[in-house]
Amino acid sequence: MEERLLQIFRKASASMKRWKMLESGDRVLVGLSGGKDSMALVEVLSERQKIWVPRIEVAACHVAVEGYDIMYQSDEEYLRTFCEERGVRFFARKVSLEEDRKERRNKCWLCSWTRREELFRVAERECFNKLALGHHIDDIVETLLMNAIYTGRLESMPPVLKMDNFRLTVIRPFCEIKETLLVELANERKYQEQKRKCPFEDMSKRQRMKQLLAELETMNPDVRESLFSGLYNKLTQ
Image (cartoon, rainbow, N blue to C red; front, top):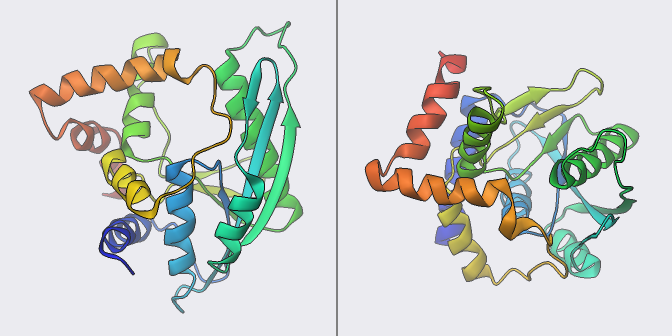
């Protein structure tokens, strides 16, 4: 295992152990968007799959999106080859978005939830009991800031979330890993970029939170860890 991948593997393994994300017999489906985070997660969990205890099985699913001014997908054959070379079974699905005239929900929320719901369906149909997502500590802290600023809620994406409506637990092995480390890995491994990126990503609230987080980092270089710890450390004490 190359040095950068090994560094991420060790950090993710520590988080998975700390948060008790894996048990022997787990069948883990990775939500593979085609972005750097999910690509790295496939690599890490494919390596984790080789370890005997706890024994796990790993697969990945890519959900492409079309409609509602959104064309979001990656090169399916590239992703399939990427997974199969690492001993990871690959699924591909496509969903269409309709304009939400009744609820008038945010396009970004609607797109994210539609893709997530399809992952839930695939996991349930194929008998996976864990869904692994590539959210890193930056994602988690940005979501915390968005919720605090726009909705008044001090909450974010938890490292482990048991779903009530599905026989499924969502896990985030990269919950304590900085995005910069994943960027470095993607550059080293030369991950192929998505064919069609989200047209709204550069003007979203999340992009504004990235800018805010960069400003906060000038006051405290460890601001991500501080906010994460304040929100979640009590859960493991």
